[in-house]
Image 1 (tube, rainbow, N blue to C red):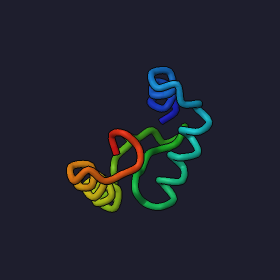
Image 2 (spheres, one colour):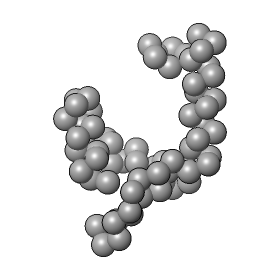
Image 3 (cartoon, one colour):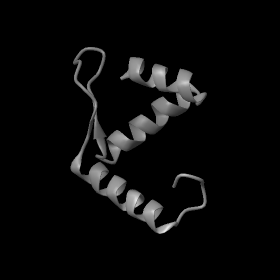
Image 4 (cartoon, rainbow, N blue to C red):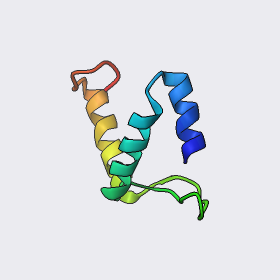
Length: 70
């Protein structure tokens, strides 16, 4: 997961520590899953995370949100 977050950090300018914190929070909320240094697994969006993404995507299509692109 760290290598993926590092790449996102480099491309977006968001600090790696912020991305790691948010990834941990999303995992604790059962929205994503990923392995550890000892147990390597692909990162995946869990069903609850998919639901949230669909809801956010619907709001974007309707023009809701306070941030551009959301």
